[in-house]
Amino acid sequence: MKKFIFICLLTSFVIGMAQEKRISFAKEFTYRVVGNNPGTPLVKMYVSSNNEFLSTVSFKDFPMYFFTDALATSPVGMEMNNRLSGYGAGSYFFGAVSSAYSEDDYALESKKLNTRETVLGMPCTHYLINFRSKKETFTRENDFLKVCIDEASPYNSFTVFNGLLKQYLSIPKLEKSSLKGLILKLAPEKDYDKEYLVLKSISDSKDFVLIDHKKIITDQQRKHDSIMIAYKKQQDEYNNMADSAVVAADSTVVSDSDDYLYIPDYASEYKKNHQEDGNLAIHSLSSAKLWKGLPQHCKNFEKELPRFNHKELQQHLKNYVGQICDMYLTQSNYHTVGIKITLDEIRREVLYLNEIQEKLDASDKKKLNNYLKNLD
Image (cartoon, rainbow, N blue to C red; front, side):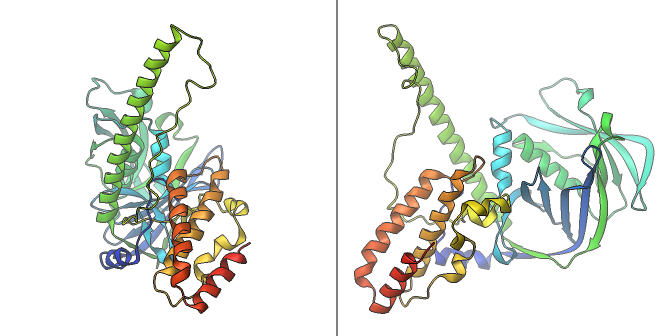
């Protein structure tokens, strides 16, 4: 199960469905890197007529999804039936990039140049852009980006650029630039003619997604606040432990292998019935190669679950099997599975499946036990 994600009950799922919005995309923009690694897909953008974007960003076959509208840019996960959830790989990646949450306010600065070029038959104007903390008194000249913008385009991809920049910096506030238009080409100024990201194709799109962006933003902010509280608590505990180790070292020999091991105190929480929306890590794998480490049934287990007379049994069985599949992902060095919370979910479902046996009719009991017995 993905980090800090809880199992969603069927009732809350139905309520959430009613708040979703269908976004129909009009265009698909494909960008590629030209230079040291030519032809490698890096960015795809799907945009609606209302300037709502779904961006796919790939880093060495590691795909991440971001949704951008007038509210914000949010990392999302792509689930079944084109539904976007708030637990994409992007949130894990950018959390790893930024070691701490910055409290600085940032400003985006731009300078218009007197040069132009043409990309895919569209003229664009060159700008130099940079961002800096408001605490800084100067701009680092080596950090300039050079972009070519089609200012006449009805599509404003600068909202995506601002949103991704804010995610990368992990900052609470980034003053937006007045720049608008479709970015056709982008690179560090010094490498603009050597290695750059450029728009390679534009096509019509009939794709769509379903999303409740307000809920995603609220949930991610709440989880971010929880993470920061837990992080601060962990740092305080570590500092206290380190201080105690220093005192102990004055009077006895300290074992290098034991004294600096850290593990959070165990809290018995597995019997709690979580009410929050969530999903499984296997719903948004960073690479198809990861399937080779999972049992075969994990790929289609939701479609192959038995149909029971007991109303709640299938949902609990689905959660149990899904959490087991997620645990196999922990064999990967780059997994995003929250191990303790996944173990808690498994223990809770094992307890449920054991206790429910006496309440099942003969048909349901046979279906359940045969299904579990025949899993690969």
